[in-house]
Image (cartoon, rainbow, N blue to C red; front, side, top):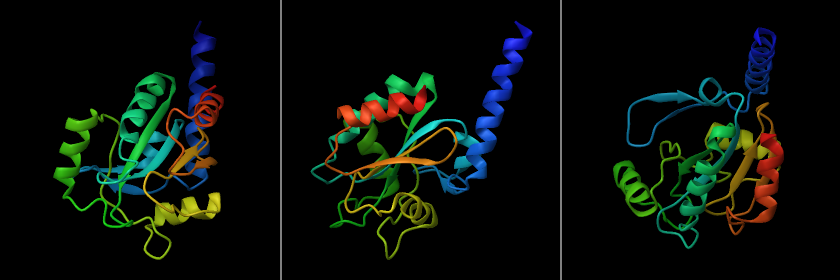
Length: 179
C-alpha cells in the first residue's frame, strides 16, 4: 500500500512539475471581484483546464450553464473550467467585476474559478492569452472561445465560441485528457 501511495505522489508531482515547465500556466491573475492573486501554475498544475473568455451580454452567455455542468462533472477527476471575463467584443462585458460575479452566480450558479477582466484580442491581449495564441495558432475571435490544456500544462485543442460545452467533440477531448 505504501508503494502505491508513493508512486501516486511521484506521478502527481511529476505532472505538476511538467505543467510548470511548459511556461503556459506561469501567469498570475486576481480572482474576480477580489484582491487575492493566483498563480495558475501553482494552483492548477497537474489539472486539465478549459480556459474560456466570457461575457455577460452575449448570445453565447447561456454557455455558462454548460461550463458549470462540465466543471461539476469532472472536477473530482482533476478538471477545472477557468473563466476570464472580457469586454473586447462589441462591449458585451461592460459591468464591474462585482456585477459580473453577481450575474454569473445568481443567473447560472457559476462556481468555477473566475478571474479579473482581461483583454484577449490580438492587439491588446494579455500575456496569458498571447501565449495561448502562440501555442494554439489562434486568438479568440469572439466571446466563449475555449482552450483545453492538459495535465502537463500543454495546449491540447481549441474550440470556437459556437461549440457548446455539451458538444461531443469537446466532451471526448476532455475525457481523453483526464484519463
